[in-house]
Each structure stands twice: as structure tokens, then as C-alpha cells.
Amino acid sequence: LTTHREIETSSLIKGRFDLLSFVEKGVASIQIRNAGTVGGNLCHADPCGDLAPPLIALDAKVKLIGLENERFIPLEDFFTDYLETVLKQDEIMTEIQIPSPLSYTGSWYHKCAPREIDPPIVGVAVSISLDSKDGVCQKARIVLGGVGDVPIRAKRAEEKLKGNKLEINLIDEAARIAKEEAKPVSDIRGTEEYKREMVELLTKEGIEKALERAKK
Image (cartoon, rainbow, N blue to C red; front, top):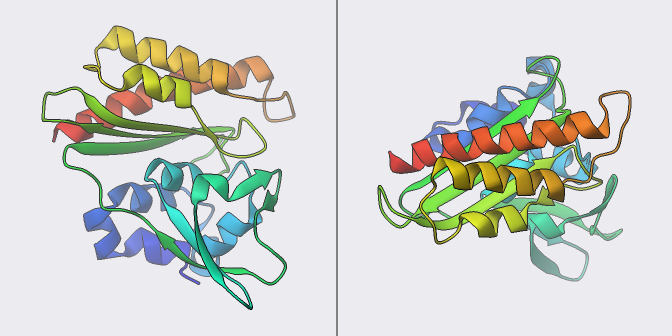
């Protein structure tokens, strides 16, 4: 039942996971953020939502409680199809858990939308962990929103980054791979080609921004 506005303004969230506070500023209007809940947003399972990609990039998991048992699942496994989830008829989501980030970790989210408060045509979330301030990439998570029936982990792009220093050529190559991993369709919001180009652009920007923050 936590509202978007509570996440946006929480000093605890700003101190530990400032990416979420940043993302929430672009979720709809302030009236909606005052009323809409984070759990409700995720359970609606709109692939063009703002919250799922950054939460998946942060390795979040969710707690689901039913009449007879409870279970935890990674958020990336929660979505099964367009507007569909693994929730059973007798279950509700009660918690979203995010692990503490590793040292030298930076995250970023950016979206392509007509206005900041509009749902993303394409959204990309990136989290990068280095083994030291100027070290190699220890962990990478790249999540694409709006270019498939569910949020997409660009796992081949992630593997391209792991174990390497993130130089510009490598970042460009990972962004191109993410573009190939997207599954967009043409619709009133944009063509398939346009969405793929935006995935590449936003992934490159996301890696660069996350890397900059990780070094700090």
C-alpha cells in the first residue's frame, strides 16, 4: 500500500536507493502519485510502466501471500505476459525487497516519452557494480521497458560488460546488443525501428551514467 509519493519523498529511500526517488518524480501527475501504490502498479503489469525496470535492475524480489502459504520470487519472474503475472487467485503482493548494493555500485534510469510524466515509449534501467573505484565491471543488470510484453533483461549485453573495464567501445557494443535483444512492435507510439534505436541510445547513456555514479 506504499504510494508513489511516499517513495519519492522518503529520506530513507533517497539515502539508500535514490534511483527510485528519481524515477518516481516522473510517474504520472502528483495527484496520481498521492493515490497510486507501488504494489498496484507492479500487479497491473503494464510493460510500459516506469517502476519495474529499475526495480529489476536493483535485483528486487517480491513477497506473495495466499490463503495457505507465502513465497518470494524475483521481480523479473513475476511478469508472464502482457498485463499478466504469476499471482494466483488467492494471492496478494505484500512486500518488495531490495538487497543492499555492493560497494562501487551505480544505477540509472531514463525513458523516452513525450513528457516527463508520460509512460515511457522506451525505458532503460542500468545497474553497474565495479570491483574498485577504477576497476572492472563485477556485476551488470540492464532492463528494457516498453519493448516487449514484459520487462526484458538484456542478458547478452550484461555479459559483454562483466569482467571488463567499461571503455567507450565496449559500452557501444553492449548498447548494440541490447538493441538486438529488445522485442518492440510498431504501434501508435512509434515504429519498431525507432524503438530499437532508442534502446541503443538509452542503454549507452544508462551505462555511462551508472558507471559515473559507481565510481563515486
